[in-house]
Image (cartoon, rainbow, N blue to C red; front, side):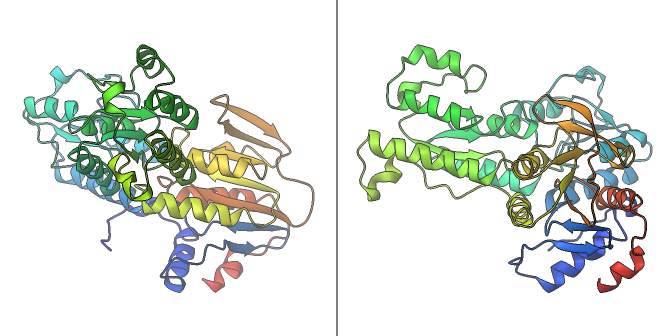
Length: 407
């Protein structure tokens, strides 16, 4: 696999060796059991897979290369390169400026850009419209394009089934950068609609079967379908692709549900299903799959709490939090700075979309068992910082050097 030049300050003297040890001893990635670090009064159960994925490392490599190769030029990012505050903060500290925010709001007018400027395309990719705008300005958006290869894989899949006269159903968060980019590319080849969850999928099925009047469709899915979308015609043949960071089980459930609806509505025999429902293999990236599977495996072990690290606007991290919340007290934090002391932790509430402070998050017992994982855009150094901060609260803990001897 290709190797990337990642700045040392993103790496960890604890987490990185553990990952490498597990990789060498499990090259086929069949062992999803967590790594256990036993310090005596506290034990850390670390997920088998987490942290920087291929796409993120690729993006970081390209972004820092753009900075080093263009010391005398203005450098811009279309929007956050990845959903991690530490990475984006470091890039802005180096002079990189964002043209748009994560919701697509313009921060720097297009008119301020010149052909001499460098523009980096984020890992989520960008819309066809943004690419065209950059071309009009004389800026080649492919020179420093950090679009994740697995996102491009989804675009290619959508194009392939679109060329076979299927309409595209995109499972994703409608206003997420990746979904906006996928929608933009997909609609170039086929009528396209976005569904956010199973509830919207069930609603969509009512238009496939004709149970709901066509006119109501345009209100139910406002802002989520391509121009000229005709539900009476464009829902007769469909295929499902997705935002790569969605829960695999959710995407599979949506695809299976729509396949069943098409099969029953058109009274299809098994060999006829593909006449109405495209045979699209799962388009979730390998890292999303691995991280989710590792989290499921992690949660089969007993523990007192889970710490999940990552950007609060990170989709893949949020889904890990959802899985953990269903089993154990879970604290979603951006960085070690959110661990205020042994009694207080500031963390993000997924449901209210705000930070809250919780008391007594560490139980008074011995040993305390803490699960640790993070999203695909979170540096190993952040996880190390969290581990070391938590470890400092436990008197009599074994030295880190002693525990790390096995790695």
